[in-house]
Image (cartoon, rainbow, N blue to C red; front, top):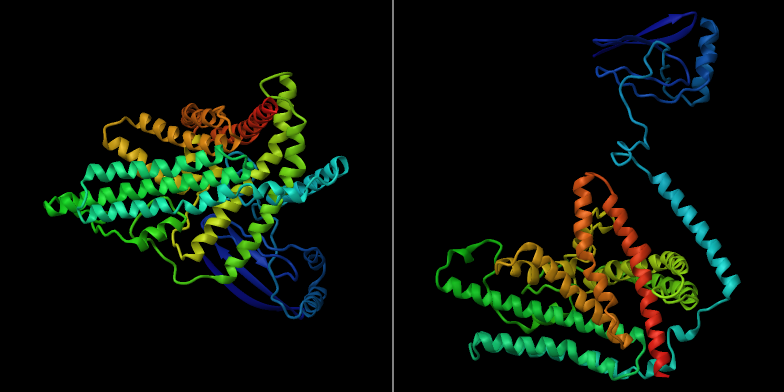
Amino acid sequence: MVISDSLESTGGAVSTTTTTTDSDHNFSLRKRPGATAVLATSDSNATELDNSTNVDAAAVEGPTESANFATRNAENHGGQDTRFAYRPSVPAHRKIKESPLSSDAIFKQQSHAGLFNLCIVVLVAVNSRLIIENIMKYGWLIKTGFWFSSKSLSDWPLFMCCLTLPVFPFAAFIVEKLAQQKCISEPVVVSLHVIISTVAVLYPVFVILGCDSAFVSGVTLMLFACIVWLKLVSYAHTNYDMRSLNKSVDKGDALSGSPNVDCSYDVSFKSLAYFMVAPTLCYQPSYPRTAYIRKGWVVRQFVKLIIFTGVMGFIIEQYINPIVQNSQHPLKGNFLYAIERVLKLSVPNLYVWLCMFYCFFHLWLNILAELIRFGDREFYKDWWNAKTVEEYWRMWNMPVHKWMVRHIYFPCLRHGIPKSVAIVIAFLVSAVFHELCIAVPCHMFKLWAFIGIMFQVPLVLITTFLQRRFRNSMVGNMIFWFIFCIFGQPMCVLLYYHDLMNREGKTE
């Protein structure tokens, strides 16, 4: 492509002619004030700039008037460069293009920031109206007892139990130290670790069941107990594997020379203490560390944590509690009424769930990681884009997923267990702990949480089949959102609430 410029003086006017030579087109673009240039390139693409009404004004005037117009226009624009006009003979349609919202283009290099902003504005407007309507209908339902009540003082056994949980990691350290010094045999080491980890999770269960504690206190203690159990299993399993690698090194086994395998076996209390407070469930002697602590960043995250915790409390007290209290048992009574209650509960429940995810997985885990300079901050992936239920479980809780893969899934495969059976075992372990964290604080075992998690196994098969059947579709993603947020979680809330109320009524 050749571009040449020439200057001519006609009737006192100065004009610039730009000639573009192309294999298909030869366009002459005349200089016009205030107009926009479209330069024809070799691939027949044009870039259109501003086009103002000044083009037509200059086109109808003679040479002198055109010169005066150009001079006035240059003065008005402060001496800016004059632009080129789009000639009528230049083709306006050059290649095949899809509409921005067509199915083939909507997910390909298209920015939808404006629509996203519109959704946020509509969401704020709609929810503001709902908040005002709710307050006008029910009044201000949040009371100080939500945050602290006299019943909280009766939960001191749970608090003391939580303070004594570090005893179990210390006992596991003593066992590993004895194993390192070869004071006890390997079967004894395994047996002691099994006993320690089992007591670590059963001890809080008996404490909660023996006390008339608040539900939130019981859930908090059970979460701590389950985390301690998972960490103890990882600590024992990892040290067992490092001892095996050390023995293979002594025997000259070439397998131990893999670059991804750490054969150094050293029992350190400092490593165990760091692991117990680190935002991970997988033990290793050392972790990637950041250079320093960003104190200002930590303060900002704490402020966000307080704000979103308050938002969760507001939604629970102002929305969820009235809906649940004015509902019937979803498996008893009018079927359509039960569906209406579930759908009405789904939106505030979704807000609480998203706030919980943001507070725990993003804010709290990042705050903890920053304070101890823990480097690996991949606590979650983009689970909201999961096209199958299997993808969701692999991306939404990375600490648990890595633990499952490391200590359940691959050990099953190494022992010759089929892949499908290994997946079912992983879901079974997850279902047991979900049931413990909910059923024990409620003082009843209805297995709703257990059934809900095990129901994920057929959902994995269904959404995987749909993804293979309808490639590059979001059918599985829609099923995931519906099952989890619109149906599954609200149904579990109603089931546990009414079973809990029935149990307390029978007790009274």
